[in-house]
Image (cartoon, rainbow, N blue to C red; front, side, top):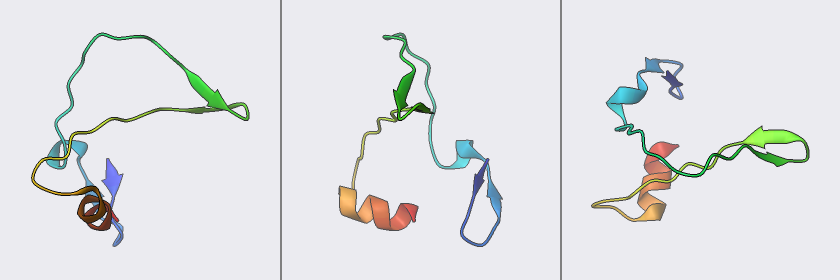
Length: 55
């Protein structure tokens, strides 16, 4: 679940399509904190517009 700016709960399925694929397994850490890299394809918009809408 995502939380909107107003506090509403939004299912992730309403804003994205999640697919499983095979690839290298990696647990990344920076300063001993785990993090994850998320890749996405933007279609029909530019990065600046996407980031404004995501906020």
